[in-house]
Image (tube, rainbow, N blue to C red; front, side):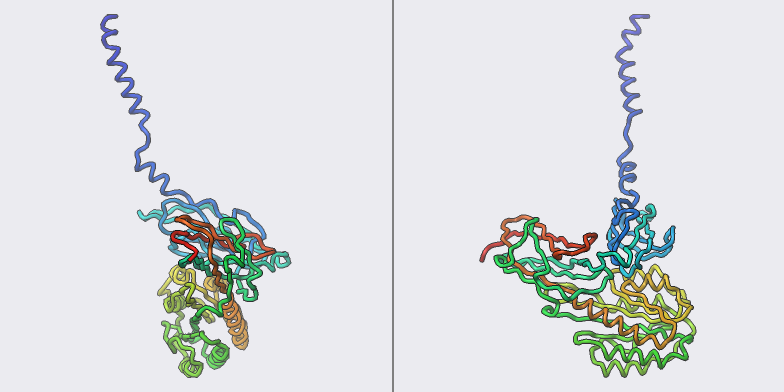
Length: 422
């Protein structure tokens, strides 16, 4: 018996090893990848429960494996308003926030197999109206380009904490760093010039509700629109649409004021239905923004309505997706509008009026905002001393900026390959 056990010891030992191997088999690669590639959105910026946030803010998050994201933002918890649908980036700029208000937001990650993962609800609170950093600045970076022998060109924009364009800064107000070291303005031939030196075309979509509920206001709306047209500036082209059952063009893009005035004569009463979301989608399709060192083409849309979308041909999510990264102003008349929806659509400004006689004044305010925004672009050009096939970090900030939060400075990168002194 003892001899039999001794003979079988190697076999038993091998069987034990095999059994242990089976029991400790790690998860398959597919299971592991599924766990990693469907991570819950996290690491929000601003961080959860942040306070004293500006009225224009960049939401950021991290997620692994998702191909699209939905973003909800609201003043109530849980947030109900979808402000971005099917975006592919992990950042979203939000403007037109209110002072001293707590906002709740969440991100839903969407994967290529059709599944979704909902992130937690985060919050932040905007700054109080008396907060000292209201005089601060935020910056937007649009383009970094290089040109031989060693030029670096940067296009950027400066706005205040309300999201309004800032056009009063000069070259001496900025500090420029290359790989963390200040750039000598004299040795680098550094120059920062305003938008006036850059070819610029401003496209403006004027979208006017003409549903039957506005029957008694058509003349006043027409006159307010005429006042707006009279204030357009050189290089500003306007297209006019009316909408009820469907968006209908009254004038294609033109800077001819007489032609636009004549087009307003065709603004007439429409139908007993309001295709608000369809009008937004149509308006957003009429232009594409272009930002380059040599040329800027930027569009903005102004939407006037006295109600809500009653037609249902399109959804709010589709409308918000259409205006993603585009500038939109909304004006709502009366008590049948949905303020929270018009606020979400009017990412550059939402205005309420109780009387049609207030419309002209709101058009004027929006035109002033448009001009201010258009004048807030800057172009930086300098000769870099860097050489070789290396990447470098460029930082631009405003001296003595009282605001030090998100976007208080901008950072870009460039490669110095083939750079030379001549």
